[in-house]
Image 1 (cartoon, rainbow, N blue to C red):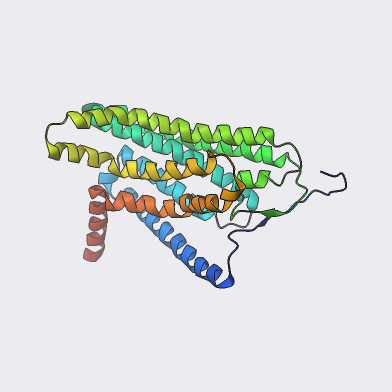
Image 2 (image 1 turned 90 degrees about the vertical axis):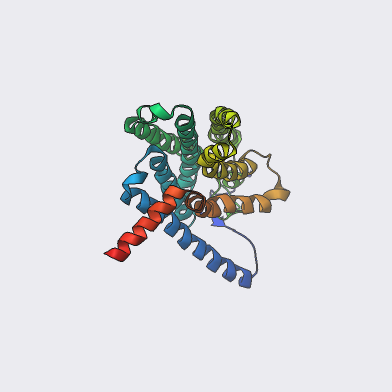
Length: 295
């Protein structure tokens, strides 16, 4: 960069460059998705808090997932860009780790059902939850420090709908090699590593399911894990395509759409998957409705 360029202190988000009518339509669509996501995740949190039958480790971790999803959807709307960058990294890292813990919970409930309450006691649940959040904040802090140390000389436009790290790095007028290495390594740590651990947890579960003689027994055991598997497949599949696929300027618009899906649609899909495919959550919902009607 030339020495006569001054550093910029503000960034402009380009978002999706569409016509005025389409922008108005998307505004209302995303507003509705935002409200529905808050309501759905809020409902999950409320049911887990109010119904004693859901006071188990699995739903304890599901409540953390709901908090992360609420934070996800909210972090795409604030005006303060520095808070936005921090929240996105934190949410991504923490959700991956919570999904790993949930897979281990399913492993314990199937392989060690009689020792489940001993292995997955509340002390263990609290420790792993706090550790997951701490790792998420730590990775976000490192990412933010690496970005803040870089000079930005322009242009000011970020070709994204939020301050996505790789998109911001393209505007730096200095060597971004260290930051890019960290983004890739961080992506591998929070995506590939957790996915590997989830796979290790599910291999013995799959083996157990295959050994069950009755078709009904296999179906019931698989149903125990099906909601978690749906969430894992959606989240990790899209996130890996966004962060671990080599950067290609021709695919930038497609990557924005994928990012939109896992940061806006996933927070809505997660509670729907866990409520529609989970008899205990549906039972808690009906009990809450019945209690309200009888008051």
